Image (cartoon, rainbow, N blue to C red; front, side, top):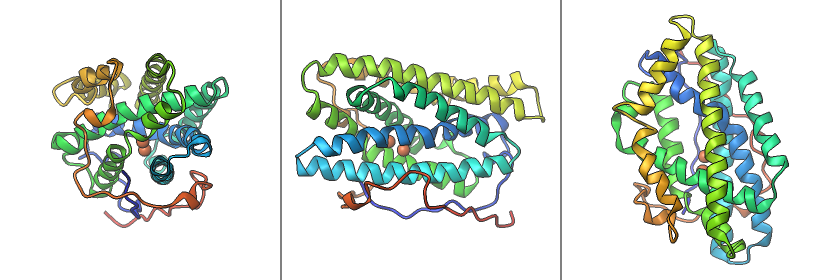
Length: 281
Ligand SMILES: [Fe+2]
Ligand SMILES: [Fe+2]
């Protein structure tokens, strides 16, 4: 279920907003670079599905999903513009992410698009759960960055089952094979984009060597904090026949309700600008 929220992204822009920590900042910035295009990819699948779904509850859930992902795309676009101001080639790399995702998208139909979305939603809900439950992930971050990541995390958990349910409703025959194959492809694409983004951002870090930054990111996602390591097994649960996202234990920590908002299905991600305020630090 999804909750409408108004959110903005304003505040000081330190070059390394994650408590001055270079690798942790790059580790999370690398995600942000892919979000505008990745959210647009999932919105596209959801809009097509909305035209074919008759169940009113699922139609409302799709509308809520689109509304939330549209806001995520906008806010992360603002985030990436701010990253440019922090001295990174963020917009160039965001565009390259977009071209890669568009090339992938061009060769698939609604079934694979929705199946890939369902898989990505499971993965992102697990990352989101870690962000909400383990304070070390965002410890020391500037408040507006912390707020943005936690807001995004909460909404990912709220709508984590929508794409899965849409896929199950539209393509009941061979659903397991369809969704698991798409999950493998989607995860490979996501992880490739992620490490590409890390590599490019690390090249813009002048304060230390590129390899030191990459190693620091690897330590952050695979070491004790283990943003990736800690979710490896739960990610594999997706391949279990009979799996459903609501059974994975990731749930929003606040009251939720279905929002209306089907009228906003036509909104384009990135349209209608969020202003980034630059208050003095
Ligand atoms: Fe999102
Ligand atoms: Fe999502």
